[in-house]
Amino acid sequence: MPGAEEFVPSRARLPGLRKAVQDCRGCGLYRDATQAVFGAGPETAKVVVIGEQPGDQEDRRGVPFVGPAGGMLDRALAEAGIRRDDVYVTNTTKHFKFERTSGKRRIHRKPSQTEVNACRPWLDAELRVVAPRLVICLGATAAQAMLGTSFRITKERGIVLDLPHRDAHVLATIHPSAILRSDDREAMYQGFVADLRVAARTLR
Ligand code: URA
Ligand code: SF4
Image (cartoon, rainbow, N blue to C red):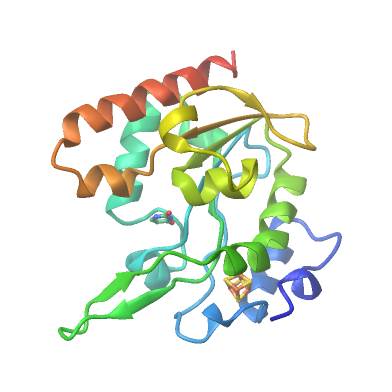
């Protein structure tokens, strides 16, 4: 697979990128998904939040973080004092990867390293245009995409780091979907908000 590079218009702003991503064939994930789900939020955002990939509802609606994980993200950002208007949300890959259960439900499957790498030019274009002061990575896929595959969320979450090659900070934390799957939701949620509060301090 060639990767997304040749599909990314080089000087486009967000509307041009959002339009072009629908024609991306940079990896095989476009085949089964309903549509590409590009990032959402203002070009002036100070914060870019990176998730993993669109979920079932995002795939249907074409907007990132509109399902259950998104609801939890919105609540946690508000509690941490990060204004939603200051945030642009996106994902490491733009097409939903899933398998169907016998019942026809679509279960999320983690994108491979190859797919994350293939989709990277879209994320780079978003970071170029938005030029955030802070990047928040939700979960290992996003954290490793930004900080390298040896990055361990369990050890290095909640710490403000310098984002390689850009004049911005980066902080990795857990993914809200992991909280939704956990038996100890409340403690995990509080830890998530605590990490976001650390991130919020870099904006003052
Ligand atoms: N989970 C993600 O990582 N991204 C979304 O957009 C929705 C759920
Ligand atoms: Fe292109 Fe990314 Fe979709 Fe693959 S996942 S087809 S690289 S937009």
